[in-house]
Amino acid sequence: MTATQVSVIGAGHIGLPTAAALVSFGHEVVCAESDPRRLRILQDGGVPIYERNLDEALARGREGGRLTFVASAAVAARTAEYVFLCVPTPELPDGSADLSYLRQAAQEIGPSLLPQAVVVNKSTVPVGATHLVEQTIGRDDIMVVSNPEFLREGTAVEDSLHPDRIVVGADDQQVAARVGALFATTGAPLLVTDAATAETIKYASNAFLATKLSFINAIAGLCDEVGADVRDVILGLGYDHRIGFDFLRPGPGWGGSCFPKDTRALLHIAESANYDFPLLRAVIQTNETQLRRIVDRLETALGCGAPSVSEAQTPLGTSTIAVWGLTFKAETDDLRMSPAIRIISDLLTRGARVQAYDPTLGKAGGPVLPERADQIRQEFRADGVSDAKLDGFSLRTSSVLACEGASALLVLTEWQEFRDVDIARVRKALERPLIVDARNLLDPAAIRQAGFQYIGVGRH
Figure 1 (cartoon, one colour):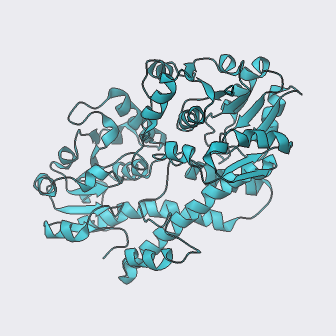
Figure 2 (cartoon, rainbow, N blue to C red):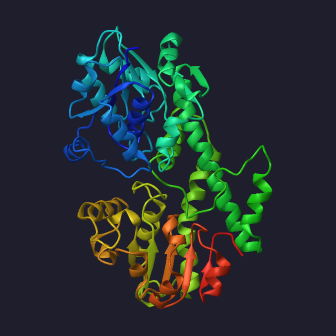
Figure 3 (tube, helix red, strand yellow):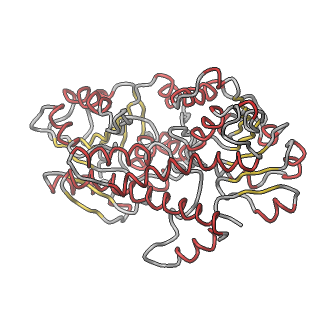
């Protein structure tokens, strides 16, 4: 049986897992990446992003000769029956999605596409983007469908290989069924809709998951005030089959490349349609409150003075804070809209100095990768941190080194290595035995027994 020829445009957090999965399903894939550094890494057999099991999945495709990488989207598309667009759709200042990368990709592949080829929007796009791609390509013999991704960073390979469902939206349902057939070996339910519905499903899914996270963070805050324990509250909620345990995990706030962008994009879509969506506005506002609340609780624990005192006189203004975790979640190197970055920005703005460690900074015990340090500082600048304040931020090469001389430890990402750390060494390194665990990652009883003041999120 002849393998289906597929191209994937974009080798990022969506494109690479998608390409790896399509190869594993028996298809032949050419993946286009315009960034020279990323392309060089891929062509040399490496992986430019961290994603669990991605290196092994790509290696299997390379070894079988069914996965190749090129610089040009036009070259990748010229022999493909199906072309997957996996390009960024970042947020614009008004909350809408920036579709410039999508237009650029459509313009580039348009002249090269085979007659009757199918272009598949995998990127998260607002309602109407499928027709936008059709108009940009400008060919009557080309069909465009929506096939939104539902991948979680950190488990994107597993999610690609074993999806909960396959959603395909198109005006021509036969074409949609053909796209669905590419994933037939997964055994996942196939939902065929029109394009607008498929595009809305993606945004609705992320907005609902963000709602669950904002809800449980708000409940955790209530637990702090009334003396309840959020762990037991979650048990009481999660065993209800109508609710379930997924996404009932309190934390510092939700972030990443999807939830912040997609909730605001959906709110922008609603406002453009003159539809009032106060629930979604409250979900977003609750998340902003949670981000500030973590720093407020740290200030209180440090014995912060009255708001009227000068920055330099407050404990934050004279303290060094150790931070564990910079990525928006464990098992990924993605810093985009990371709650950790947002919270550290707040700390720096309030005058604190920060010593941070993250497992993605480089090899254990080795130097911090220069490009990684540059990425982190760019994220802070994008978050409005001035260079003067950024002078108070530094990176450390281990979790213990980050704690040396610090007034408190703030846990912001749930890496397993933080659970396994030698807590006695942490106690010795810290100037003051205070841990604010924004991920409820550590065992409060064990931490307190080791002589620490422990503050979790909704835990007593």
